[in-house]
Length: 518
Image 1: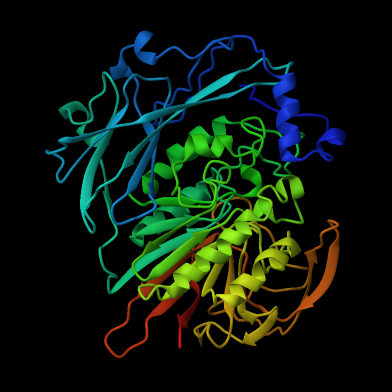
Image 2: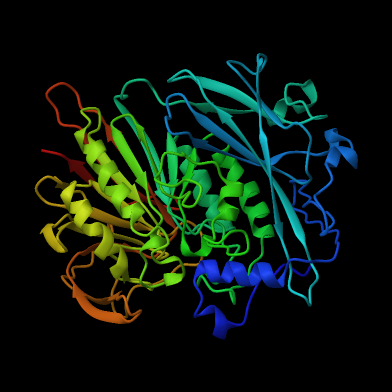
């Protein structure tokens, strides 16, 4: 089947910001011919909606019985307070009437009913393809929940009741954050996932870790396969249907906390490129501008404060959205890190975003990220920074002011108050893998390659590569992998710690180290 491809001539796109590309597309592709389109996902009964291009979509319950419209692609996310707020999102193949969520303490008691919001999303095709695609995403905000409580839930709409015996198998569960810091808990992280067998295999291993939540550092599904932030980028929105179906195996029970990568900018939907993300995800709305920068937010779980950032705003490598927040994101980051550090309840601060602060692989390091945020990471003694972008696993020594504060080999311990911050590239989630510079070997647990320096580069503001020889590349692995972090509150008289591990797709450990403050 032909797929939508939203584009403009490359010679124009390279000179356009994301907002300028949006305006170009809206001017050119505002009138489309009606089309019926359908897609199928093996075993998932997935059908993509069909509508007229000249008017709003008709509700499915006006065309077919609501009972025939089966929800799919459920994915959870915390609200601003993980102890009392959860967001449940899903997709339907047609517009539906009166969507809702039922929740309760047991599968047989789903007495609480919460109305949901339908967010339609339309994508035009190129003139030669004449394909319009409508997708429908549904979101429910659950507030006033009890901390540390397991809830059962079901999603439905007029004609489809998840509490009925026929749909009992569609129920899911989630658990709110505890009221006080638990003795220990696990969270996982990666970036650059896509829709691949390797991505699905990683998801299954992650589920076995029983994480409290998962951090996705951007480049989520690769609907835009090019990721240059140009409208010569090809774009297939049906990739999102496949991705949400794939990820549902984990995300229906584990809050899937995403941020924005370069492949996630989609200019057709909004001037900032994030209209598609806002339609598909409900994320904490406590950032500096959740409407225009949904990938910047924060939350706390136990003794860990987490901050998500939109690195497209500061990237010198891919500048389509460079400066789109006019410095407001960086100012908010400074304030938020200060608040977390001032809290007696927070032991560790973890920051995650897409573009790499430190990496020697294909995209190398982004000088714009370093210029904007490194001083703040040092100032507030951030404990761990997690990136994607490069499709490898790479981990630095502890760094302060761009220099090695302490070597951190596999199995070592580091103290951010003294040594600096450890930076991890965890981009081996499932998309095709990258390599390290010529002659640089992998170096990981059980296969350590002694090497003190690696020739690499970083991106400058003029979009040029500045050659660099680095000494901070401590662990390297060119296989599919993810990060697993165990946070311990610490027994009386013992310091709290983060036990950070990297696991291969097989579940085998390839790296581990500890972060202990003070």
